Image 1 (cartoon, rainbow over the protein chains, first blue to last red):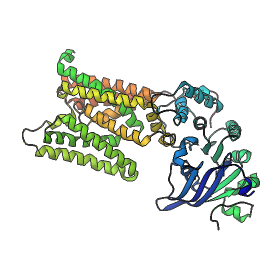
Image 2: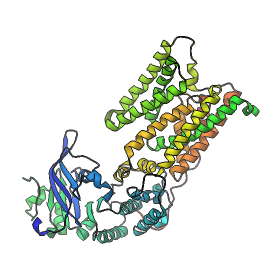
Image 3: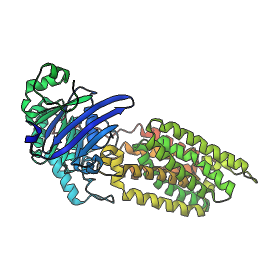
Image 4: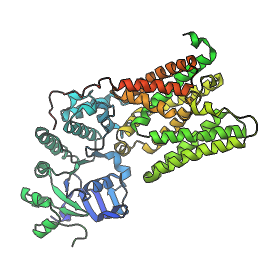
Length: 257
Length: 275
């Protein structure tokens, strides 16, 4: 249970990280080690800083203080090796783009700047769309899809980046139950070779796949896998106070009252 | 309807075609990236270039190119650096650019310059010598957007993801604003500085409603712009109207009627139920 017993190399390393929007601290004194082939769930209350933490690891945001390392490099350098499924909210409802063209964006990190995608890129995008059951919609405008279908396209887009680490922000929100189950299976398969970090409220994803849990509410608490039970996860929704108050076994990295 | 046999009308029509191509492509990117305000800023501030050209005694179009490109780069850097107050600073540059132009023309000795033709366009104001420069700028726009098409597409749809994938979104953004400056140069004689915004927005907006891809939106925008231009020029000649205003009013009438066209339905698709 202690760190020394774990042999997997470190994928993500965060030391003494602080981040604020303006004067409001969003994250304080975060320390975190995520090992390769981890399947980490990031949970916590809304506005607690979950998405901010993910965006800091991706290098989209820069910390005010502290260090983020991904595979022992600066996040910006490793960005192409990280797949990202953002929250399905900020997209234009008017933008004319097909499902296939959205999926192909996942190849941008692997192709040159010039001209077009190759036939191999297209085959790869089609294969990924097939894995999420969206191949028959390849030529449809993305804005004709339901929220859940669009989410599956974004998952396909993240898959074909061939990521070392896959980040997903509420990946199963608005996805129907049948496809939620399929996505869990898909993630489980992927986890053999890919480190996965999921921000989720979805108890299904948490109980079926997760190896460890991090709870984010301005500060970050890391919970090791062995203690995860459904009952405990339910309680974690009020974490960290509830969790500590209940005296459940947990390991904490970082300052913690 | 044989008015297009006159050389000045042929020039105007050719200029209209060049302007339609450039503004169809760039207008599409302006609309989907929601940078209409900054485009207006570049167009108006470019007036400073006209003043500068007259004051120093070189070709007005060269003044516009230099000034508009410089302003667009400054605006790009400002809006990347200070997102919070970018629109305020752009508004300032917008007015200051125009003020510089007016003061420089005040200070220029000799005959008064026909300012109206730069502000609102004039079909007889497109000399053959300008067409070459317009064609070259058009080629530059087609080459840049063609070369970086998938990157512009990705940046426009999801700039955060594009940047994550290593697409140089900041550089592309600066390039886009510089190409807006090119468009200003291309259409200043026909439409004029004040009305350029309509040429950037109306056709792409109509096109977006029925386009399935960014490239088809560009193609339809070019087509619509050219229809507006040809009809507007014809009205301008027949009824002795200012060309820029005539072109924009034709566009506005088309826009009004396009609102009554049925939008393609948000298809209800079978299979793969969504939430």
